[in-house]
Amino acid sequence: MAKFDGIFDIQGTLKGMTFYKSKDGSTLIRTKGGVSKQRIMNDPNFARTRENGLEFAHNAKMGQLLRRSVRNLLQIAKDSRVSSRLSGQISKVKNLDTTSARGERKFWIGLEDPNGKTLLQGFDFNLNAKFGSIFGAQYVFDPATSTLSATDFVSGNDVAVPEGCTHFSIRVAASRIDFEASSFDTEISDVFNFALSMTPEALSIAPEAVPVGDGFLFHFVLIEFFQERNGMQYPLKNNAFNCLNLLQITE
Image (cartoon, rainbow, N blue to C red):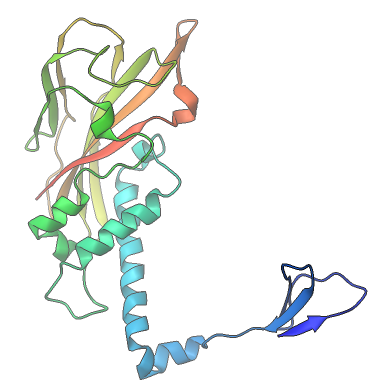
């Protein structure tokens, strides 16, 4: 490390040298270091690093596919760290693959383990709006038809609405995802919109059909919040309080 003493105030990287400020305001210089990419890719001492890199890329690809399967819903309800949080859970599921060598473990093999499904079920795509804290009704979910139902649903009491909310809507989605083939088929229910009311009503929300085929079936529920003004409903606080939850995974 060198110390720069001159008339120019330089910060950044120039010809392999990085100029930066120390805590006392001095300009310091350091050369670019680290292990070369070629060594990491070929040196036996970095075998574990290569394995971790392959599995990290696999996790990212699987997470991207899952998010794409409900892209239209995810645009309405997500937080800034949803990609990294989902990738972390996918990595835990991938670790349940005990049949493949390190570096080749697969998410969909780990998902065949019941514990793998448990690791993902209940995942909230927006940590600021958790389904378990928002939806308080006694409900039944039928994975065969992807139907969310409740007998005496009270919209003004059974959903914890944020301040300023006058209406909310609920949708259910079923997505058949074949992770090995990198394909998916998603069906989304109609939008069921509710004004806040204390009158009980029957609730039954489902997509028209449940996708069939290879892979796993992912069931989602979306809750959106609105504020009515002059007879029009507007998304509340730019969707900050919307909830998207992975209810269940079936085969």
